[in-house]
Length: 162
Length: 204
Image 1 (cartoon, chains in turn blue, orange):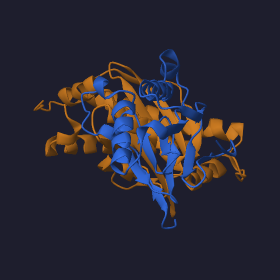
Image 2: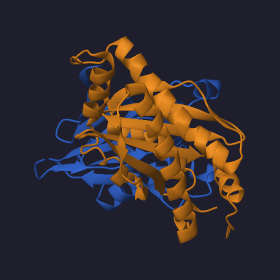
Image 3: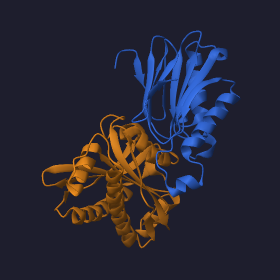
Image 4: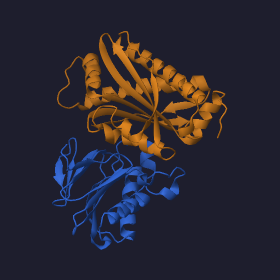
C-alpha cells in the first residue's frame, strides 16, 4: 500500500485530500459509502453495518450506522474545508451472503442497509452518482480522489469501475 | 446482558460450551472420515470487528462459510468457517479427487454436509447440556472474501455490542492442521436463556 492509500475497517471512516485513495475490503452485508467534494477533491469513506442508530441500544459507535455514520463523515469533511453543496456520493455493498430460510422471510440486513443509506443521503440532498449493491457476493472497493472513480473487485463476479 | 461486560464466570462457561460443542463436532467429523482427529483446546475470544476480519490473514482471503439458523427455544445463528486449504484437504480426503480452481457443485454439497454434521453435533451437545430445545436449519454455503462472510456474524453481534464472540477450534488429522472456526451467535434473549440454563447469575 503506498503512502496515499488509506484503509477503512468495519464501522470506521477516513478522509483524504487529493491525491489519495480510500479502500475498504470485504464488504458483505455492510455498505461502503463514498462522499466526495468535486471542487476540493477531498473524499471520505465510511463502512457501515446497520441502518439506524435509533433502532439500536448499543449506538455509541457512530460509524456503525448509516444515519450517524454519514453525518459524522460529513462533519469530518466540513472540518477539512469542504463545502457541503458540492458533495456527491457513490455506494457499494449490501449483499445477502447466505440465503437461509429465515433470511428470505424478512428483508435481509444488506438490503435494509442500502435503503437506509439512500434515504439518509436523499434527506441530506447529497446526490447518489452511482452504486453497486445487492447480489450475494463480497466486494472490495477502492476510491481514487484524483478522478472520482470507484473500483469494485469481487471473487467470481468481475471487476468494474463505477 | 452486555457482551462487553461478560464477567470471568460467563467467559469460562462459554469456553466450556465451546469446548464441549467442538469436541462433539470433531468426533462426528472423525467418524465420517474414519480417522483419528485431535483437537486443540478451543479458544474463546471477544474480538473487535476489525480484528475478526484478519483471522484468516487478509480480509479478502477466500474462505468457506457454512451458515445455519438456530431453531427451537434458542434462536440465532451458527457459522462454521474454514480456510480454503483446509476445505480442499477435507474434500480431497473424503472424495478422493483433487480440487481444482473452484469447488464444483458436488464438492460444495460435500462441504455443506460436513458443516451440517459438525454444526448439528455441536448444537445437539449444547442442547443436552442446557436442556433447551436446539436444532439447526439446513446449511447455506458461501465461498468468498473473509471480510464479507464474517460481516454476517459481525453485524448480528453489532446490534448489541462492539465485539464478536467466537470460538476457534483447531484440529489435526495426522500432521495436517485443519483450522475451523465456529461462531455461535445466539439472539440476545437466547444468550440469557443459555446462561440461565447453566445456572449463571446475571448482573444484567
